[in-house]
Length: 317
Ligand SMILES: C=C(O[C@H]1C=CC=C(C(=O)O)[C@@H]1O)C(=O)O
Image 1 (spheres, rainbow, N blue to C red):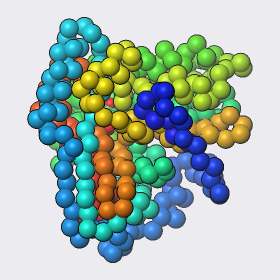
Image 2: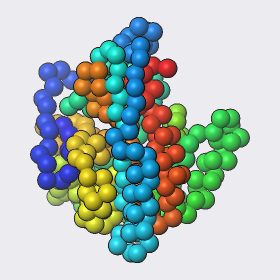
Image 3: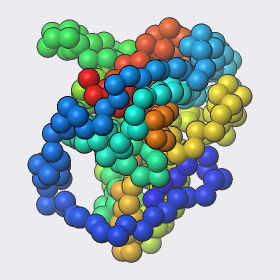
Image 4: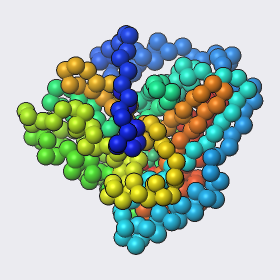
């Protein structure tokens, strides 16, 4: 099932013909063992062309506009996204893209559903019985080329006021949405650094136990969605800024996708680091949190670093 980015749009639901449970191996090792290494011929294009839907300069102008709105005190944070179109000379195979993502991002939430393929590092909400978990990510820096520069970049991220503010807004929103439904809730005091193949993020893990009369899983997920990782805060104002500065329909990007079962358990990741695939064409989506100190050129570079997840999986380097 999937939530689109827009809250008023209908939820998408699919009933799988078959399900496989990997509960005993939460580290995905068994899943990976069953995913063959993609062969050189597994459907990669011979030639492809990339084109941003909006000129990068226009997107930078929108970033500057959103940062000014934050400085005027109209909102704390807005997330602005870009779309990159790819046209290939052969059909793109979602299953091949998914396998490549599984190899590069073994700890991510992998999905190929409703035309969207991706490897998201961000968990909106997982529930088993009365235990819930969320993995909130906001604040980003690229990976370093060697261990030393990678460590330097990670400590820069931890010291960056701009990134800490992006993260704080998200952390507070997640804790606020869940706390009244819980008997206890725990979150790391300072964000950890999550290292992925292409970027590093500030991360807060939230764990909680729900009260006996807690809202159902989908209601809880809907209370969280969309978090400030993909929308901003306050939510209504951020939706307005996104509508004004982006002006296109995000569809399932910036939504949530996963499963829910008849016992009221489920797991929904945030739909980022993904692409929509239609035959020979793909649309990649990428967005950044914008706060008062966001610099348009640095934000543009950050979107390019984040694209280092889905782009190589589409073109098989
Ligand atoms: C909205 C996206 O990333 C979010 C998740 C982690 C870090 C983010 C950031 O640092 O801006 C974004 O909030 C995306 O990749 O499209």
